[in-house]
Amino acid sequence: MSTHRLIRFTLNGTPAKATVSSQDTLVDLLQTQFDLNGARESCGQGLCGCCTVYLNEKAISACLTLAWFADGANIRTIEGLAEGNMLDPVQQAFIDAGAFQCGFCTSGFIMMTKKLLEENPHPTEEEIRHYLVGNLCRCSAYPEIIDAVKTLSKTQM
Image 1 (cartoon, one colour):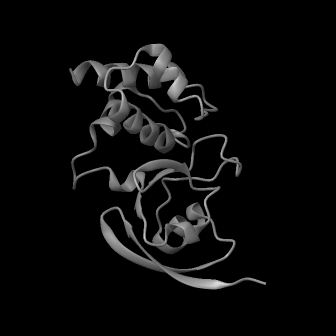
Image 2: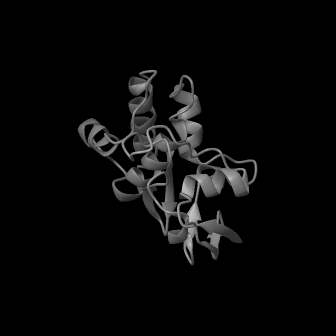
Image 3: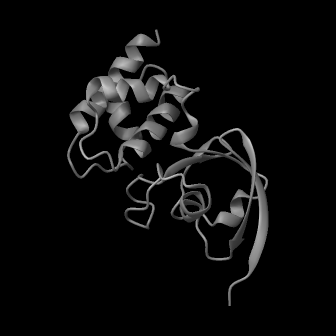
């Protein structure tokens, strides 16, 4: 038996509301009710990072988070990083470095890289690799991803 509930939250800076069932995940909510497809479900187990979004400024796996937990929360997705037509510096660095191939995992890597650089503006390569260990790229764009983060780290000095 499914129970439905109205939740209210802030989505990429804008007040939002949605009716969700007890089994809806946050990634389902974002895709089906808001047409935000940047966070993608890949593994469904929180192991790949493809569904990374910020819930109250904390990076979380949206495939493991029930939509009910968004009630009263602030949610930020990859779609909310750009300011108008101006990409976030992390997004631009990934483009400049060619840090993607198929692009499926890219939004999760960008979201985690942004958090990494907020917490540690000048990480070593080892710290970058450690921080991003929960994100998987099946196309093996890891060298370009690491290069993008290193370049960002140097420009933030």
